[in-house]
Length: 104
Image (tube, rainbow, N blue to C red; front, side, top):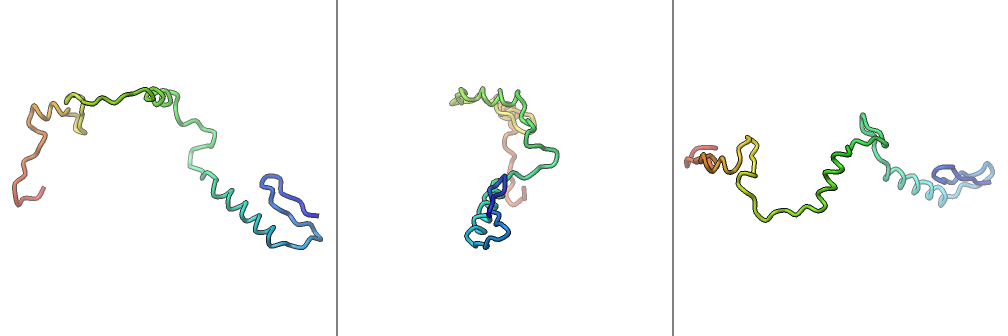
């Protein structure tokens, strides 16, 4: 008599049952669907680990009501070198002179 596996309900033919291709294909479809939806294990991570801190969650939650300003002060824009846009405008360092025919 045929039974099914506990977790995925795969068909298990009994000792005296004929093997039905349709039932085997059902098993393969269930396996394929389950494997496709699985999460790959990452080194040092567990499925139950909370890597997202409450501080980060709260910060993100606070952005729900954020309205982006239409304009920014030049002093609010900071470049990778630490200078603000206002600094670069004041020091005339926003643009580098380009000499025609010389590579950058």
